[in-house]
Image (cartoon, rainbow over all chains, first blue to last red; front, top):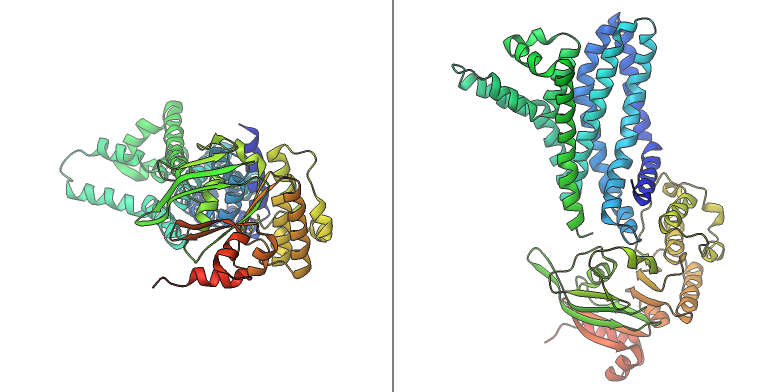
Length: 264
Length: 236
């Protein structure tokens, strides 16, 4: 990584890291993790309950915080671009400077309480690693979406709306459309098309990975068996990681294309 | 350091903001870019800085080299926006340090920090600074690398009269040392104090470019305010 990009990442990361909102977010994640471990009776149950926090709250925070931050940092980005700094350095510096503190907040907020819980039950360690790994990848995916949209859409309200729409599509609408498709053509075998469609949505890929890790894929019936065949084992897990990384790379590179052509 | 723009055009959607602007800014002189609202002043400045990408066929030349998207030429440019918004959770000192490291500058000129009385505020977070102190920091950022070209957008807006006078003296010193200054302002006294040359833009086209004294002589007016008021009158 070039020096300028690294310095810009450090600058944005310091600024974001000192934000009160990020501290509140970290605290709330930690509180949720502690309460779930404490009230759930066992750390293993708490892990299953935390799936929804990772699949819904963490992407929502990344997309909302990320979008607003990019709009607020616009003047500073302009100032950076009047220095001998390449546009790519300013762009990747912005994305990295946002993603690093959001990932750290997530790892601290969820990871520290679960780490303590793991002392009394070492069998939950693989589950914790999966939860933290999947959550980290989702932060990267939705931070990339947030930056790309805030770069493209000039109006802050529209930009935030578009970012929320992406989150809503990934978490709710997309699955609704798959269900509609299943209901419409229920007489035909749809396992393969559904599998392909599932792989296009980062939240679905993350959800399946976590369900398989916690051995609750049976809840999905026959489809669960298909998912298990594709996504379990080292190869399946690697496939899921690659899909999530591609889901992060696509908005990242599209955002870079827009940023290079943007008039500030 | 010479700056030249040739056939500069910029269109935002249907709106053509700059319509073939040809200008050459003389080295070591202070040029004010004035005109009514939406005349294209800020777009012109931003095209020179590389913040706005001119339409095809436009050319921006800095020191005899055509600017085509690279950033190296900006090493010799200092920019002061109308209202700077630095990262609110960084201190003023951290902002200055980041910019120094980005430019690899080891010996920045921090004379204005002392002159403007900014030193006691440099360890406060930018978000906690008053608007005036932020504008002082903005002035320091623009001048700390001893730029050969200074681009200033409404530079004294937000500065108190004392800070404004100090900054103007500092600019006079910089132009005395050979710096080229481009500025936009609506404050006529500021233009009277600083500008040697004037570019008058209307609807993205240059209506006048030359020494302020020539403009006054042409108009038969001693005061710049009267001349500008006359230029701004709608054509019959």
